[in-house]
Picture 1 (cartoon, rainbow, N blue to C red):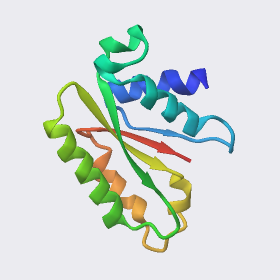
Picture 2 (picture 1 turned 45 degrees about the horizontal axis):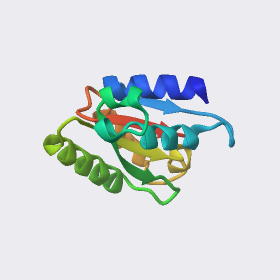
Picture 3 (picture 1 turned 90 degrees about the horizontal axis):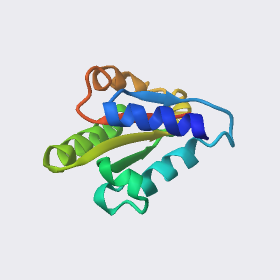
Length: 126
């Protein structure tokens, strides 16, 4: 959990896309829950985190039925939110990315354009 937290927080703060891959129960989802509950900007419950920007998560639950349009739509919504958010980092959270690989529409191809110098943070869990 501590390693996941460290790496994901650094990647979110620097807008470096990250995909956390691991077996079920390896604290991937818990990592994002801990980050969301602590990185709340000036409203953070712990004084240490108040010097960091708030994190706003746009979740997308991947499935074998996912398509590129729905992933792109969620990305676009997150980008629009980021354009008007002050002292906030917007995160597109792609949960269970591995399930989308089984879609005949190959929805993950849309990620190629998103992950090159993204205007928001992108976190994938698989």
